[in-house]
Image (cartoon, rainbow, N blue to C red; front, top):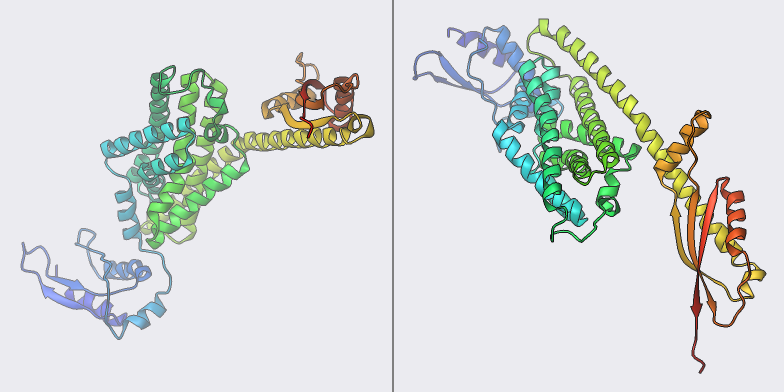
Length: 436
């Protein structure tokens, strides 16, 4: 009240067009002022209006008009160039993205149910559809926004919703797995480790970390610029809900290694999404409204980013080992295939009419290589290295003589090529062909 002239003086100095209406309501305010301003100019103009005497409890409504016809607007766009929204708009969007707890839980349970079904059906389309329902973008963004603007309640609520929501997702998936396991809904003797969509979430590598970091940055950018937040929310949910559901299924089937590996992937992705959004909001210039709170917010951002980065670095050791072991397993498989192809092109076998069937099973999993690495680092550990198990089938024409010791010959050659212990099992298939 009583601040009309200073307010209008600020707008005049900024060369902003405005319209003024006398207040005819309850009499708490003297007038209503409406003026157009580019999105990035909202925050600095509001700061100047507060310096002119506008109280914190004054009504401030920020709208997105469809069209503004003003000769001064182009000059304002040049002065306030940029695309990010104001601090007040950021807070409002963060609060809107984190719905009421009951609504959040309902959507999360539904998305987890759909995602769990998609995992068991090995359907990528179903899993992506479930991510449209998942409400995890809001809590991740609100936690970061609350930190940079020193709003403790917003931060705390965002963290609680994220942690509680993902634990709920694991429990829901475990419950669904326990219910459908052994029923007519699934094939008899189903081993979830053989399902492709589940296997993807149990062998995380550095690409998973890049996905989470990119999702967090995309989420922050979409909120700051007000575009594509729904699609970005799907990307964030993809990084969190499917691995959480995979962890729950691991518990339901009693595969605790799957449950633990998927849970580690969830945690890494959660931390990466939060740290990337947090840093981007801060370097974009968002600060608390009060000057005295800026230092406190800066310290909080630095400490939280450091904790998240350290946690990610620690968990990335696991990602590095999985990445390395997956590469080693693929390399061994390639070496085995190439050497067997060379072996069966040699005259001794080619003249006898042997044909490599191409059925080669390399039973050499990343976890086996990881165990081997540990044994190499700690020689006193009383554990035996698992050998590479190679199974292949050779076809030959009926009546032709089979060269002896194929298995032992292949074993020696594969040992030399791979540098690892190898166990070879050879199957023989007799082929007959009708004469013309």
